Image (tube, rainbow, N blue to C red; front, top):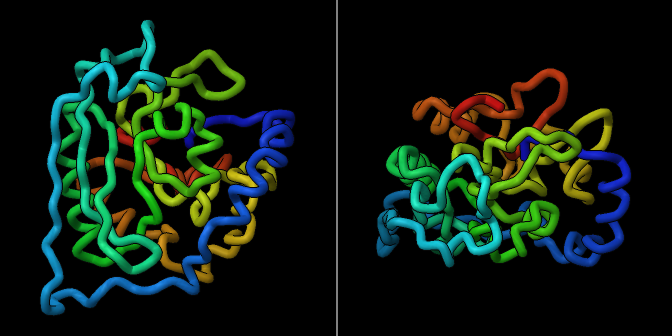
Length: 228
């Protein structure tokens, strides 16, 4: 997420998102993916194509720090909380497309579970709605809440993974609403990201940093090229 959030905004979204949060599957009770090397399990598949204007109809606008033509749409296989194989879609900067594909191949091979991976446009380019759905997403041209500075998501250089199990925490507040259920980071559940785990190491390998290491706040869902 990589942004400061006002108390007022957080309060406003709680009521509207409560029903969505209540519907989120509990990963602790979900099925597990088939073991590596199991018969009949398909290998990772991933691809990249040039973005079109319609791909980012809501998440890109004039004045964004990168042009929409500099973006790439990735298709990545991943393991869901139901233990089944799914194919998700991410939008990232073209310079990072190959590296991000490599990360998601590593996560697939390691059987890391991701509930869903959809472009933020499917949530009206609304970060709150995307997080409430526990959606993993990347590009979204927006400012850091409460400031005029641009989020690293605006460059296609940041990805938020499983926001519900990996919340944004500042001054004791958890975002998205309901994510405080996973405040105990030592009680590791599927989809959770913790210190030096396979997700952190995979992103570190491509030069991206984790918001879970920040000191003034924790953004456990957030990885970025610039560590912002």
